Length: 339
Image 1 (tube, helix red, strand yellow):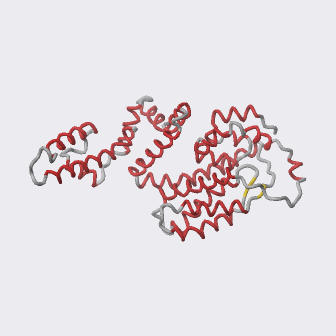
Image 2 (cartoon, one colour):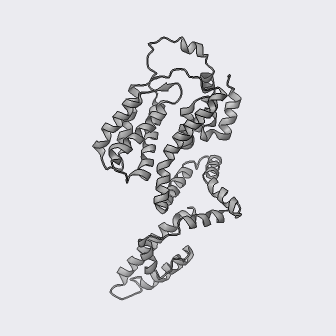
């Protein structure tokens, strides 16, 4: 089935961040990578504006010519962009594992290196190239014990796996993936891979919702701020990332408004930790106090206990305690106020 450049560009514009155009072109590994990274963190999606004609040309290559290639062919040339992608995605997969699975036994010896190696191998299989999965995972497993327990361990593990994958790169054997009959099994395999990736995050959400929301809020903010120079792309990403909130608000009849999103986040983050409950006691506030009430109470107490205005001996210590309590509650309210 001949692929069209115009159709590929249309799919790129509509669902390119989720790899829809790669599914159309039979590039399943590339599609999965884009699903898990939102178009290569947005950068890869933009780069494809000039790469799509090449992808379409590769998809339209005559299978007979592919079969006539000599049995002994040199490996593909080293591609710095692919190597950088292997590094980034390996670190990305490792970070996701650290967030959701770090409490498991043998995490640093088995779980983390397998996750990092899987991310590196996914990038190595994009397009017409692939590498040796067994050797890539072996390099990850050998490197992981050296950096046991370090939160920075995904970096050296990803480096070792990327070097190994680059050394053992080769061309893929031609496969017929463009027929409509193959679409169902391909989507099934991609769904299983996506589920395997999202499982650690789901585990973390259900077992530590508040911490996860803090982390995701910071990640979303950093991601959106990264595209400050492209306001239209930033708006599009914000719309996509907030789609679950919009959907929930539509179901509850609240409408597509910011206040509804805030209410939902307040429900998710309604429980205070012991440290935050102690901070409320310091400020003489109840658990139902709003952010404005917390700020007002902090200012009044800070004015009362400021060492320049209060001559008592414990004024300075009390002032510091009040300030620390306010910082704790400020961090708690920060994700809900959409910094």
